[in-house]
Amino acid sequence: MKELDNIKESYISDMANVKIMDDLNNLRVNYLGKNGHLTTIMKLIKDLSVEEKKSFGVAVNDLKGEVTRGIEAKTEELKNAALLAELNSMPKVDLTVSSAEKKGSLHPVTIIQQRLINIFRGMGFAVEDGNEVETEYNNFEAVNIPKFHPARDMQDTFYLDNNQVLKTHTSASQNRIMKKYGAPLKVIFPGRCFRNEELDASHENTFFQMEGMMVDKNVSISNLIYFMKTMLSEVFGKEVDVRLRPGFFPFVEPGFELDCSCPYCGGKGCRVCKQGGWIELCPCGMIHPNVLEMGGINPDEYQGFAFGLGLSRLVMMTYGFTDIRNLNGKDLKVLEQTKIK
Ligand code: DAH
Picture 1 (cartoon, rainbow, N blue to C red):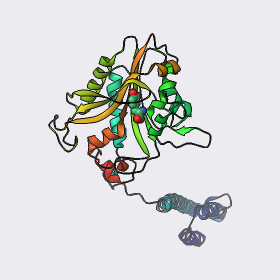
Picture 2 (cartoon, rainbow, N blue to C red):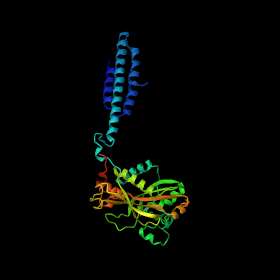
Picture 3 (tube, helix red, strand yellow):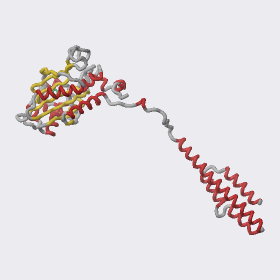
Picture 4 (cartoon, rainbow, N blue to C red):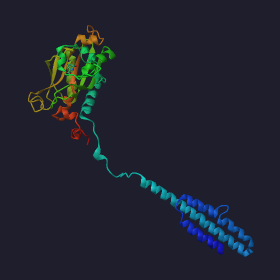
């Protein structure tokens, strides 16, 4: 039938022109809708003979089926095209590129500090954080260095406008710790310290220390030696000897420089210990009664020891750095040395 052929022809050309979903919906309405071509053409049926009616009906239904399937196929095609367009507009990520090249690592100071913390925790010490900006009182007065005392000259300090200071040593936290814990106490407090230094390979304006205090009844120099020897033997992974030499620090009496037998040559003399067989590592002493008192602890009842381990120095020794400035620098070769491969 001619009318049906015309519809089929126009359907094919209309379908070929469909570009977007809206076009397809219009096509659906135009052919299959209430007033669509394939609905209205059925009105012609009443003028046909019985025979013709039958074949006409079948032909219209066939075409309806073809249009319906054509619309379904086109819907799928348009959806896929939209998805592809969206994917193409996304930034390209190559999932096959390996990330192994850019693996990070902990900073050498962090690694050694963490190791020390683990050792001291194992010996029953609590771990505290200290302030980096401190009151002048905590940094000096509270550790027995009064205003205008010549001992202040030992540490050239950064003063802030509000009269506070960048802490010059971790000892600045001693007073706060004693007031927080009371006696007895066993605490370590690592931290970043600052001094106004002439910079060279062994002097930096920003460096790390780890302070420790133990206060109890009947604490003596023997306890100090025991803890230092145990700690250093753990750090170096082998038994080391320690020796004490007199040293002056206003907050300890008596005060010592604690040396450790060189773990690298066993005391025979090498580059690390500058042939001396001993390494100066950890100033320490018995806490001065004034310091205990200012911390709210009765010095007639309690004694204690304190130490200020040079963490930056220990890191340099462990990893063989010859310039302390490398620890604060941005040279990735420094981190390479401790990278977990
Ligand atoms: N605070 C001292 C400094 O930075 C180091 C020190 C010495 C700490 C003796 C102590 C100590 O706790 O007992 O030079």
